[in-house]
Length: 555
Image (cartoon, rainbow, N blue to C red):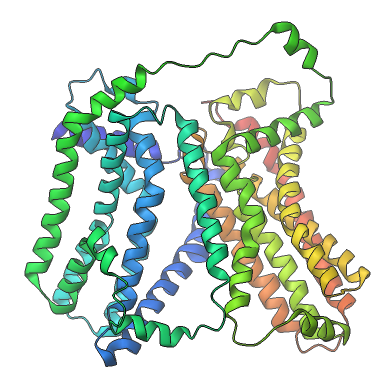
């Protein structure tokens, strides 16, 4: 037991980011953490709790007050099982610490238990907050008593155990009996395949959302006319047991819920004793394909370019050729219209291209202002979501000394890394905005305004993202996915962007929507705001941004 606790503490500590190195960085991290909590965690938790509360109150009349939380919990379990596969597989078989742990006097079950615990905490920390918010909303909507609240506390930290156990067992079976997964690149390719499959399903599903009465559909499902949860209840029996325990104060259901989780963990550890070491041995014995490269051919392919261009291409190739970076940093720039399309399909008002064209031609200031705000806001969000800039320095990892010793100034490296984020984010916005403007016959001058404001918005967010990453980059990580998922700087940047959009875009819209001024006046106001924001972040970069890189300790 002591070995398990000691190893688990060590593994959990390795997942967290290093502490700031001086007082100035500590203050900045505290400020950014407040932004992240207030800008992301609290709003998401509030929306989740509000949904659980409203559905519980609305469906209480037909005795289906648990429908909303039932739906959410099944979604959480599915999400954990799908996206936890990569995390658990990498932690069990491809982490860099395995070669140091194996010589220790530990049984396979102890190693798997510690690694599973570390992966479980690292993967589900945000979900704990989400589950707690849903239970609070459900409790307020159904007037739960003290006993139910006590039971709910256990559910917060145990609900996702079963889906994580599923992924661990599946990983051990695959690695023990097959040679399908040989390295990290294969895991990332599998993840990339499932991401694209999921996007395709979302796109197909969005097309069937029109003319659906969602209120009637929810009542229809919740009243049991369609047993939509039958299969999911079989796959994740922990969900109905837990909901039954808090709905009916059924202590027996709660005990069965706890026993189910304990039994699942027990089966996983028994399988670990039999399969884990065999999987590691099988992995180490797989032959590696060695590519022979002719020196003359390599030299012949070399071309001389300027340092800035070469560094730019190096960053682009890293993002494009690495599956994890390609999925989370490149693809995300181009998939956002799927969600806009889904919103368009489910809207109650019949909005058509012809109607938008006529409204824009009539110089309706409200519509033009809304388009202006949309372009500025979506540009900022895309530049933040792709994490290219907010992960620019952290991506270097153990190669961070490369930044210090190559004959290229820190300022040039800084600007090139930022430029990569600007290029992909701006392309992801303008590739859709410009055709949309042409489709609804927006004047050329307005299109030019949209392009210019998009570039200013993306530039500001990109420079802000890399500045945040320079304060305390995460340079210690096992694989590229860890560099993304365990990097708090991405959340800090996103929270700051949410605050920026809320103040500038949402606030600007409500202040200007009753104005009789024309489009150019509104665009000029946003231009001045974005120009001031860009000036401020550039001054900050000149003052302390580049210095952060020089002061950063090597790993």
